[in-house]
Image (cartoon, rainbow, N blue to C red; front, top):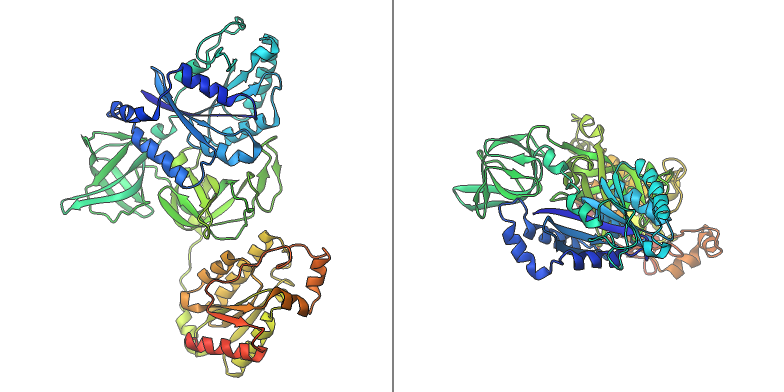
Length: 604
């Protein structure tokens, strides 16, 4: 039997649960204790059902399938997995999760209400996620007297909407409560001669993009049980592969020939998309988890892409912040540019945006910290989709759908320079490093940094101070004080500080820099022994009492929104290289401690 995954969606109280219950009851519900039987029956058919179930469990463990209920049932024609997602707008992320692996969608509409805002919203999302076949189930026809003209009105309006979204649509009038036109035909609608919903589900083609495309396999692990056997195992996610085929290992330029295709039940002559297999190569290549095997017409290898971004985090997306991205079986670093636009999923309009909030969708450029193999999402969901993970909490906060790799990925390369960091250090007589002062406003960061620079300059050290207020007069004068702007503020300064370290300078950075993630970003730009985080620790009450610039007073009056410590959080360092308690130290004593710490770190 073939397997069809589909999603049900629609507005609240349109009858999704009733419809699914009718399908499960009338179309022979498949209980979970029957999965083993199905897995046994599927051997040799290309359907690896146990792997599919493992995949669903893995998705749940990643935390991105909250409130998505997966139901299993079968007919004589095929097996089904249906993702039942909530209709509320705040659960858009759950609808996206369910649709990400679906071949088709059943969209419900209440015949009394017609097309609603959520109907249009879900239709745009379905199109965005690459689902090409949709059934519009016009439910509760009994509550409008089974009138053909009401059904026709809704169907024509929806077909006009679908025409601009690029998917095929069939409209079915149903009464989920009594099962009319769900599995069997019922009384009251003799005028309808189209397929029942189950007829359509039995006949709708399974998305064949993966099978029709070029060969792709994501390596999950390397098998080497003995000296005479070395295979790479994974799932074929595109096309098919046969012994004798020439394949390339990506990223990289290694090539080899497929010697064997090994499974638990013996060798195969061919492994097609969806099949789990161990590939034995003719050559002993260095292939690791996360690599991609590909035939002719390989996927692009890039560190930057344009992508649709679907934000699932409670905290807004912060451009410039370092996240993690899970691409295939690899986890890499990720940063996101400000969106080119935000998509109004109700109308399809492109709206200006600087960031994305919960359930919002936008288009923008993303940057990985190393090259990865990617296909456009429209061609291959497995290599074209990625999830975004918060580095500190490890929570899934977003998903991305690749449009195309950016040309800069292959055209912009590092230029080797004749004079390097070590040669510059030999001239200055000391190593370059970043001394990053962080703390609340009025904690004393700039005062201490200024004293430190005076000491170092007196001793002949080459220094420069990047002060938070000063850089906002030039380099960062276009930035405000929202969380997104603060992230970009720190990112720019961290990049400049990194360049100054390469130049051989001791760079003193005096920035509130309230977020740990951005301070970690700054740390990651230079070598481990070139970064010294100094926590200038002053209680809020003490800092507010000092208030030399009157900023706390303005913030308390509501004249200065997003002020750190008042209505915007400060995340203190957990393991700074130096912790200065300014209630116990004078500025001179604090400066002495910084200079002493730099000597301990062998900067000079």
